Length: 187
Image (cartoon, rainbow, N blue to C red; front, top):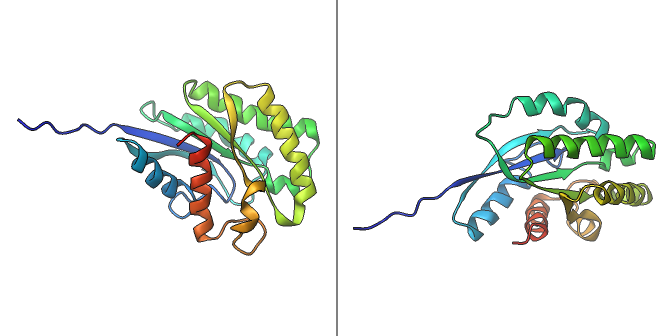
């Protein structure tokens, strides 16, 4: 008798701006391809809450409603949060940014308490100083949430893979972004 391997389905989730808004053309599907090469599971994008141009406040304001639309059968193993680069253009106050970002992480953790939540530090070529400030605030947020961790630091690689607008990766850069997330989760 030949036994067939049963492959389980696992999910990822993403919250962000334009870098997360289109799972089929951004980093999510390359990441799934990479994960499937390292595991015996089928991986799917189970939830995406992202729109081009979103700030942290934009993402926070609709997250609670968006999370209610996710079926109980969709429980991501990994949740990836890449937010803040649009805040670098018109800086919010530190308290507002940290409150909104913290609320996003708290809502995700409440919805999926066993998910591994990974956060990105942001990079925008024309706003390096502001991004550095925001990344310091992200460190503050992570320091109070032991269940969330830094998964990727755009400041260490994105400028080399920029698609020409000082914000978004090139097509091959989205593959690099997937590799960066994969490394951040330990694969």
